Amino acid sequence: MSWRQRGSLWLLEPPAARGLIQFIGGSYLAATPQLSYRRLLEALARQGLAIQAWSYVPGFDHQAQANEAWKLFRAARPEGLPALRLGHSLGCKLHLLAPDNGRGCSGLAALSFNNFSAERSVPLLAELGPRLGIQSEFSPSPSETLRLVGANYRQPANLLVRFNRDGIDQSQRLQAVLQARPQDQTQLLELPGDHLTPASAGLRQNLLGAWADDPSRQRQIDALAETISRWWSPTAAQPA
Image (cartoon, rainbow, N blue to C red; front, side, top):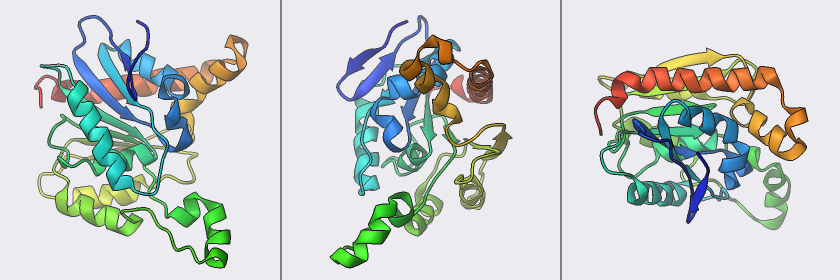
């Protein structure tokens, strides 16, 4: 398998794929998902899952970016393959805001869901904003995001993964909103690691070379990929 680019999507296509991962990364790691998240995505590909990873730079209009990602994934989706939406940090929020409200997939795996305000996410904004007369917030705001998810999101099958050393994870807040919906099947799983666990091993090796690879990190990522694949297997049997 080798990565190939199609516009702003990076694709990895194993032979006889049994399902499709539509991946959105978090923060500025998402600009090069084929590098920053390479180890996780390639581990999932070895589980027989085709990969489509969106390359983007985060902005303030998260709804517009969610719409853009959804359109790209929809246009590139192969016929007959069930799709799992996979997000890390901000990428979880963008999947939750997809204009189809989760109907066009067979489930969502949300890693380290993060829904902070713009001032907390961009510390310089909190310092300079008042001086410059700037009042800027993500659209939708954190509170509005959770309200929209509770009111509109229709996908019952959601796996929320938090890592036990992640100080900025907000998965439990999302879990409360999702489980308040009728017929919800959301599960919350806690694993060893930190906020960068899904990205770190591929990033370290790409920047520093194979000698810098951390076997324990790789084992964490392999276990994470297996967990996601195993959780989704019953769902993946039926295309969305």
